[in-house]
Length: 58
Image 1 (cartoon, rainbow, N blue to C red):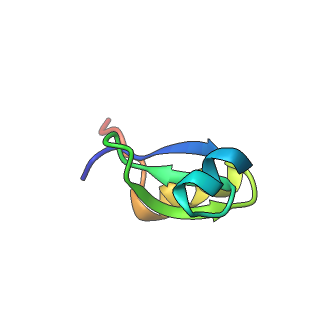
Image 2: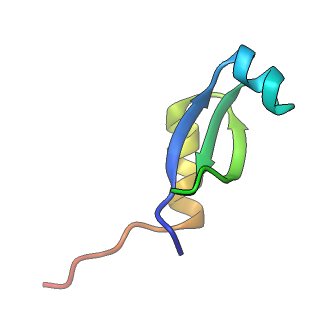
C-alpha cells in the first residue's frame, strides 16, 4: 500500500472539489482515502488505523 499523508483542504478548494473542508488522508497521487477529519491529529490517527506504522525488529 502507498504511504498515506494528512492534507488540509480549505474552504475555497473544497468548493472547487465538491467536498467538505477539513483534514484528509491522501495517497501520494493525491487520491482522498479518508476524511474529512476535524484535526490533523484525528487524521493521523485514522492513517495509523488504515496503515499501522512498521515495527522495527531488534
